[in-house]
Amino acid sequence: MSTLNKQHSLKEIIALKKKITWGDVPAIFHMISSSISDLEGMLTHGFDSAYKDVLNRNSWNLSLLQGHKDQQGNICVTHKPKISLHHEYNNTGYELHCYPMVNQQKLTTTSINDPHCPFHHWYPEKMQMLFRINNLIAFSIFTYQSGDEADMALVKYSYFCVEKLINILKDSFEIIDIDNYNIAEFYQEIHKRKGNILSTELFNQSNN
Figure (tube, rainbow, N blue to C red):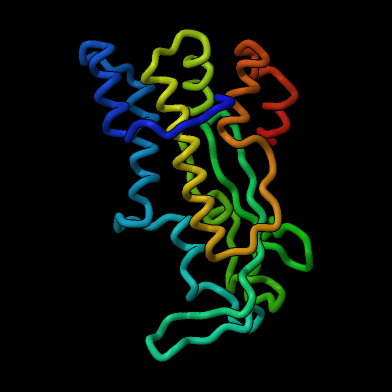
């Protein structure tokens, strides 16, 4: 994955997989593609998500950010909210975590009406994990060990999808830091370690 090129749509990747497997698509491929499809529709579908919640400017601390509503009712801010992002890999899969920055420190606890927090209310149990791709670690290991062209394309596509969502956040937030391996770098580590990633210090640190 050292030279990533976005060549296929998700629909095309699924069609390729069906062609390769004669329509007998493995359950794990279906789970990954369904998770990615949900990510693609996260901002347009009606269901709630932490990702949509943090982008909702009505939840922002406008006093801290020197914000106001213009004549059209749009919220404008002088200072973008400061956040930190973390690529999390665990037994569930891949997750993108968000931490508001308060006094130059990551906020990891509940905050209600803190004048120094960029959000009026912050509940880590509901807001910290912005989204998840279920079973991505197991699928990435499988792809390295015995995957086909469609499997590899799906891993690549998951990387591009996450990067697109991070770039949307960059438009609204000042992202102080993005730590840990992104999906492309994590797959490269799987390759480097010949698939033996689950028992390594890398995975154990990410899982804490």
